[in-house]
Image (cartoon, rainbow, N blue to C red):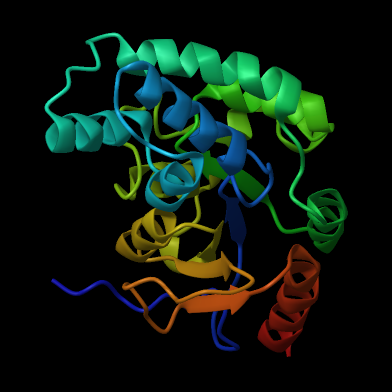
Length: 235
């Protein structure tokens, strides 16, 4: 069964919901998070640099990180690895979370367009709560509009968190656009049957490329792009 091409960004479609990833799109937390993963790995005797951790594990759920590290090293990270790391991440983000450049102005501009938006992230709810509180984004995201794939136990690239967000808004996937920065999230958007805007200043496109995938280099480009699409769809 082939996934239908989403129409949310086409002139003949209808854009009804924006779903933001959190880390790397709204919150600049990938660097601190991956440095924590690297530091924990070294504490367990695994040689992993901060740079390698960022390259390999950005956008991945902690359970997947644990699985990959254990498989390649044979070192048991412990049954409580995910829970311990999750608690450490919450503490870290309470002190170090920072907004992605342009995120605050972008959110205000998208809100002014009148398009509903939600968050679909691999981060846990407690982690996102402290991130949004620290950077001042909490007013944009009431709890019932923030969806955690980790808390659902179905992390990306499983598309469930995006599908769930659409269901909560009573919007079909074809009318949704996902804003992502990771290959993992792009794959989840594709499998959910949604259009996707990839925030990536440079570097290659993900392996999964389809007509519903667009690319921007900076968040300043997002609101003008959505404005143009809404204008085309209403003409």
